[in-house]
Length: 397
Image 1 (cartoon, rainbow, N blue to C red):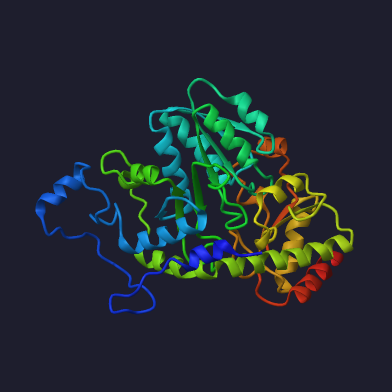
Image 2: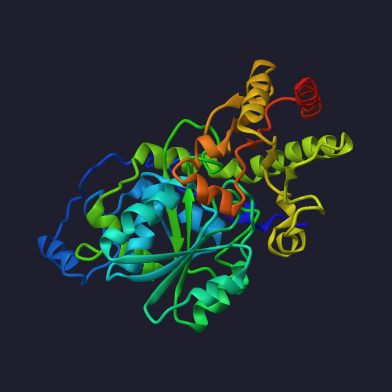
């Protein structure tokens, strides 16, 4: 099978000023206008596409954004300072006049807290629904609903949203659909399935090294233009600027993302296969036929990249999950840390960390067990040796 996504990334190239094979980093905070009248026209919206001020656009950030858009299949993209800034700007750009929005109830804890605790203070009403049931989104639509927000694969329960169904629904009701695709870059392409905008925490798989914080929005040229509008753009006016050095790093790392995603999936599959051979219960992984949305995920995914690097395991109690994670770290299987998409395996207990913003009663309602162990499987090292280490620790527990 041809890897067309990798080719699209590869075919975006920028040369250094003196012909170097890598682009230069443009540090300038502001840009000059040879004709002073043109500056006024930019502020008045008569001229588009000019570099004005790095809170508006920056050449290094735009070269990364162009490459990310090519990967995602969107008309345009915009690099920002973090994944949360990407979510906030995208949502508020749609909801800036208030109204009602519908969101998945199994989302990253920081996103849940933003929606539950902050957005209502801006006159935005939120209804949370089960992302695995498109009918719940439809039943929640009101006269003033403007937006549907979901994650391709939910954090941390790995529930999959039927993006095609949600996109058809959003169009029929004249709503916008925003999808967080952080867990599944390249594996799933929400824009191609009909999403209006896709948000990323680039800190994760797109960076791959857990050494920087960044985010991005992929969408139409029109929506990206609205975000950086000098008078009405949420990105322009709230100012979560991506640093040019970070943009350069991400631009360079996108070249290896296809290789890395295949490697993450391969390592995760090796571990899951071994876990199933040993009849370990409580495994959630989209690549096994016991996964409740196995058929849907197979329809959505690009099979070139496998089933991803995220595995969750229900250890029945927080004490057991923590004890297993500690043993896995001591035996050099992985590192006990939040985040994901690193070359080495990262382990966390979401109920007490990345989902701790969600109240206990809500965690219980959506099925987030105290004993859930989330594993972001890295590709560094030998897959079989690391699977052996996992089994040793699990059996000791």
